[in-house]
Image 1 (tube, one colour):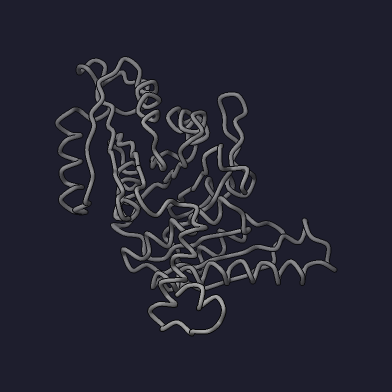
Image 2 (spheres, helix red, strand yellow; image 1 turned 60 degrees about the horizontal axis):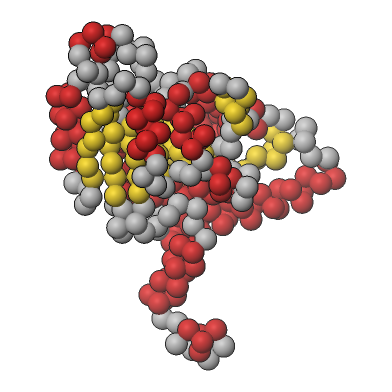
Length: 315
């Protein structure tokens, strides 16, 4: 059948054509679409709760498994003096209650809690990562993300993609998502993540490409705009294949970061999803000028998709 289609002898029915399109997209997908192994770090703060909810659509993919890890203190004294968090961490009972509430709300097919009582939380996370996860979801404060010890452990391990959610307050669900893109591997992963989430909750996506005037000569701007238009059109097509409404935008600006924030305000976005390929500078990460500007100045929540080091060279 496929050989005949390839030869042009038979035109596929609409349903068959849609299926073939989805299979083609799955083959080039950044986020694994079957048998995905997901790890979520639960710390007790609102960011980690939201990261857990943000992971749920991926956990609904065929054959996906999700493990929610909560590092709990050995006793009250260690809870008060936890070095992992500035605030008190969750007790065993609080962690169990948080997971049971989440499980009742989301009803995921294969989701399990794991409580860790360690001398070193980061070492326990490192040990868990050796089990071979595809995606790790974390919540992190904007100013402490670049020094987040668990995120650093994930990046150093280099085999799992990371999704980091940051913000000061969150709606129950995100309804308008902005996805800035330059067309790279990390940006593609960010777009796929946004589409999977939007498909589940019925959100709308705005895909944005910025042509920076300071980086492009005037004579080349039209060509760069045309390339950007192809990039956002491709991502809009990805959304359409999943039944998600996607609006495409190409804008010219002297500052990509400021243009992203302006677009977020204009479109009333409650979430910005960005791809990022960080560099570790000692104990600090550098996420790139645009990503760090958006992360520190956005009025809404920000999610970063960070591909594993073993795959980042694809970007």
